[in-house]
Image (cartoon, rainbow, N blue to C red; front, side, top):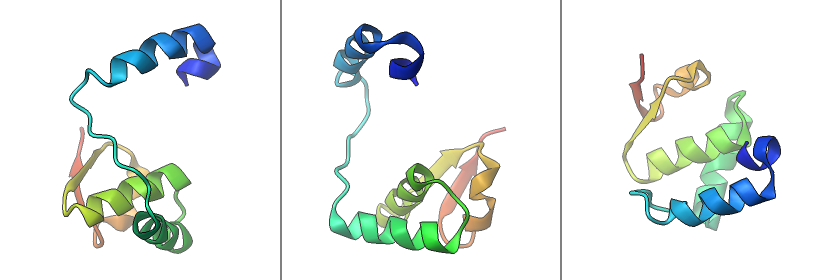
Length: 83
C-alpha cells in the first residue's frame, strides 16, 4: 500500500525500518504454501489471508484480526478478534 500510494522512495524508507520492529519474518516454505493452498481452496479468502491462517495453524498461535473474512475459519484456527 505504501509503495502504491506514496511511491518507491517512501517504501524504501519504511522498508529499512521494518527490521528494527519486533516482527518475525517467516519464509513461505512448501509446507506453509500447501497449507495456505488448502485454506484458499476451502474458503473464500485472499491468498495473503490464507497464508496468515496457515502460519497461525502451523505455529499453533492465535491469529489476531478484526477481518470478518476469517469467521469461517474459527473451527480450524485460533482467532483473537479485535473489536
